[in-house]
Length: 251
Length: 290
Image (cartoon, rainbow over all chains, first blue to last red; front, side, top):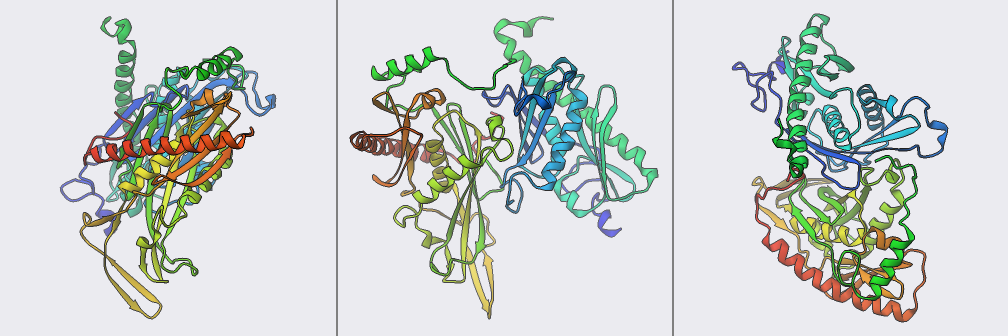
């Protein structure tokens, strides 16, 4: 009890000076690399993620995997060995990265219009450069931007956000690494923020079921906020690309 | 956008043009045989590493971070610290690196680097000793390949040198020895650090043979046309490692001229790198957002 109390001070500020409902600063960019069909970079606080999208292209490694009615979405999550405070041994292949890849796949398939590209494959690769809490949300958001950069049709943005419960009462948004380590439950939500549909929900540790609605609501609000930030970046990017044809000036 | 062939083949006409142009001492992108593509280097990119750099050589993108740990020295070399290279081929670079696909290239690169850094004149590991036979610093040099556009060896060696140049090793305040227990006190002031001496750190130059001429800094298309390449690692004008890559064969005379070309190009590269690193100011805006 006494440890949890420290998460939000009595003047309502968190360890890094944010309020309970405040996101960390998000900065992002589309089209960082030229080799992939789409790429994006996102910073959420100190968490930094690069994403690359290849495809849709022919299915690699034998056509037996290909599906006649949809594209295969292939995700790989990896973390740079220097991304964490203590050096990691392997960048990928451990249990946590496999789980991350599966969860990423789950969230992205819900948003991509896979039925438009039968017999093809779409590769999504994410690389974490700096891990400071909320890795999964940052990966989902980066992947969304990279898919948009690649021009792959999406139903809508798919955004993810974490939320927690501080002082046994106050829902808290966008958990940093420090807050993750100090304890308290973490609820990770990936959602389609415009239609308010949840595509992935994961919870660690326990809290009373009565608290769930408000924490979930906070996380969903976070997804909406993130979507608004991404949307600004995307439209600026489109304006910039199209400035040569002056479509940014059109109303 | 929809490519229905997974094979990456350049069309023959283009390859032929490459051959023709190289014999005329002008390449497809307008360079001469000994010219490099534009390079961009940044240091201090990874905030929680002891030193880091990012190099972009046209389409090739490399991120290097140095992490330091306290370790016990090898029993046969009690006075030396440790230096370890680890290359990670990110699948972001090309889908072929997915899973364990990039491992072969990664091992080739890290072996080449560690053999280039092995000699004492190149990089003095004795500076990393904390206490003879008991404690030393271990430098982990982690290299992340983010985009592959040809000429990886050169790019990686330049980025590694810049990252080591940027590396700051904490100062030791005191060492308390209590039997087998060694307690090391690191200086509290985060700004009081020692820098590494990297004047001898080798730069690698890939000399690529196309037709009967040799070129440096091949791009991806030129790498495909070449019959073979020699990687020359040069430190203070001396060769410290040579390795031949590719499937082709070289005549000893060609080999010799490759090495001479490699040394002279490495010298020029070294000079411009030193100059560029000297111009880097602290707290510059770096990263992928630029």
